Length: 300
Image 1 (cartoon, helix red, strand yellow):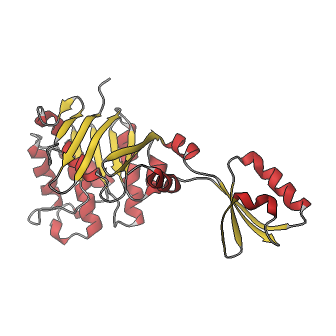
Image 2 (image 1 turned 180 degrees about the horizontal axis):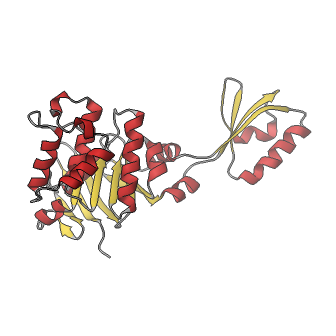
């Protein structure tokens, strides 16, 4: 099967910085995929190359088997991008903006699909409102609709929920889930790592233009960071637990817990030492802790 996105040896050099350094990446059709990294890691540059907004210095990028340079028309027809910035035409209504966007791809009188987009994105009552009169959250909904109006099989979401309210975030993800269930490939960049953890099947992490981690979300969570145990004790931490100590704050001890099976032995040891447990919390690693660990350990 043709990859939804295929990248080989991708490099991008600017006069004072190299944004991408030999990136290789395959995203399969139907995946919900996260591309994560700190500011300046190269995420937006990679997306700009896929969208045809920036030329790579070296390497190739394909969307649904179409090279983004040699077959740019086919590649762009197969891709919808929701940009991070709020970009809109202030002279048109919401519906007119979508009709013009559809027209760029040769689509005419696709009113049923436009109405469905407006409905799913809670924009029906704003359909005849000029875009410049919309709030920031409403403008972001219009950007999502514009990216989807030509029904692209690959959808790129670049920080789609930045600065939006909880209600929009929930309705947006519900709609995107429906599209993914229908077979659309989703590529997400976000600084809300809990979103990526909940939504995405695989994750790639970029640092300084390199991919420094690439695996399923489940594998990253399982192997990437320590489980931990938080204890509030009636006394001091016994000596046999000092090697596990990772921090202490406001009377709480934070201990490493590599395996849940070790919990019973820890509690038995505390009883034997005559130290009571006032409160206990077992925490498992989340994607944020894995991300921070990977970024610390990755070679510059």
